[in-house]
Amino acid sequence: MSDSVDVAERVEPAPAGRPSRGPLRRVGEAFLRRRETSVLVVALGLGVYFASASPAFLTQPNMVNIAQATAPVAIIAAGMVLVLVNGEIDLSVAVVFALAPFNMHYLVDYHGVPILLAIVLALAISAFIGFVNGFITVFFRVPSFVTTLGTANIVIGLVLVTSHAYPAPIPDAATETIRHWFGASDWAHITWCLLIVASFHVLLTRTPWGLHTIAVGGNPLGATEAGIRAGRIKIGNFMMVSTLGGFAGILEAFRINTIDPNLGGGFGIMFTAVSAAVIGGTALAGGSGTVIGAFLGALVLAELQDGMNLIGISANPYFIILGVAILVSMIANVYLSRLRRTGRA
Amino acid sequence: MAGDGGGEALRVEHVAKRFGGLTALRDVNLRLARGEVLGLIGDNGAGKSTLIKIICGFHQPDAGKIFVGGEEVALKSVDHARTLGIDTVYQDLALVNELSVYHNMFLNRELVRWRLLGNRRMRRLAQQHLDNMGVNIPSVDDEVAKLSGGQRQAIAVARSVYSDAKILLLDEPLAAMGAKEGALILDLVRDLKDRGEVSIIIIAHNYGQILEVCDRINLLQHGSITFDKPTSETSVQELTDLVVAEYRAARTQKLRPDPSANARPTPRP
Image 1: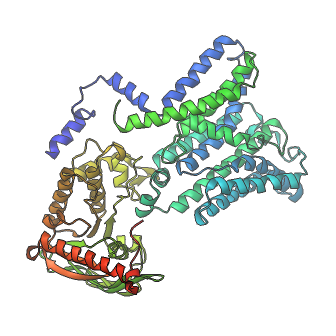
Image 2: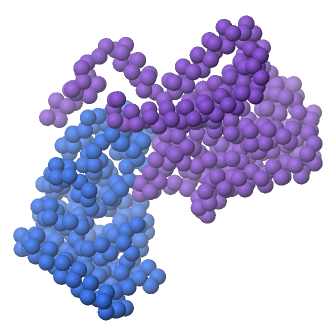
């Protein structure tokens, strides 16, 4: 009995009872089953549409624009997906984004720390803020929405108090090479972004840490009963998203060549990252999410903003489209996951 | 020694547990022979959950001793108990719906190579192990959410057995399960019993079916074991009478306030 099951498994992976299919069809089905598929189609579709509507769209300077708009959002979203899969959220990452470049500036210009070390320390401070977020959420059982709303306000306050609400220049200690590596050159931002997205995709899908992240978000009690230390996983993920937020902020500061207390537009960058994650197929309920989907979501949002600008539509309806996109992808998400569970429609 | 009941898997002596003002367990004595299947029955609030949580290391008893394989142990945590071979299959099964069957089988015991999941190996071993135990599911790649209640229960049991559990605690394995699904679980328990490698405590609220596979029945009432007989010497009728008598007594107690009536543990949340 068990032998026959085994053999059947090897010869024909489709569960018994279904008619056999050609390999092409099977690859097609596997592709359609992936959560990233729909948002990839949207990203490509938008690309084709804007390319046909405006000759400027496919030019290299415009590609750089899109890449630079995508990168900071996608970097934050990569970490945010892990936090969302945990069933939590981090609002404070938006302002850690603004704080990190200031910390780098203070360390270099007021304390004489070498620039690379200052960047590392600024990231460590970002990670510490993530640790505080996780610690308060896990041990005091404060919902992370509230925890991070609190820490976000503290952090933005720190930025404003220490900077007197004035922008600062990039430290002179930063050589041309460092500036280029950390965001000033055209493709630096997106290169970092792709590296980070790839590593976080592997982290979520191919490592025990990722598996435990899904388990903690999908069945918190069950994960604990299986011996997973849920608190550790959550705190770790808060630390990662916060570090990524700080790193994205430093890249962004180098790119625009100034350190601005309003970098990222208050909570704006964080909400864009959450939107990208949601459009990419991450459920806020926890238990499922995709880093690549979030990257594609960030790409779609960047394309939209850039493309509408090029074809001369005012930027104002962008938010209407963003809102509709969030709702449509969320509804599709719920529907598709139900479809996946029951096998087929 | 193994399987003939000669060896002792677990012994619990004079275990007591209080939660603040509530006495959950007064004085529990329980013995589980190697390869034996013991049915632990009792009404809601009798202390079954508390006893199980003490045996699996989740709670520490206020008084009393626990012996595993004849040696006294102080179970510090669930992980500690697990290293001694004590594992629990909870009612909620501790399965993650969003993960595949094989990932659930290896949850928190993942096979890793270069810090990455050894998915191919885990998939193969999970399939082999389930085939071995006679558990039939469409595919180990399926998300657990797709499976039926019985299949999930079977996978949770298979997972515990796979992790080298010597003493298996099954918390209400037949709760909310259809007849066919229930039969699947009972077959699984019977298979395990035939191999004699694991000793099993089945916690049951509704014990009709449990009697089929148990060697012995213990009844837990008001925090102590009040009844202990081999299955062959008791019947569903006798057990029903015992529990109903308890229920009647509790009702009369409620009419006449009695301090001990409050000293019950709260039901499972």
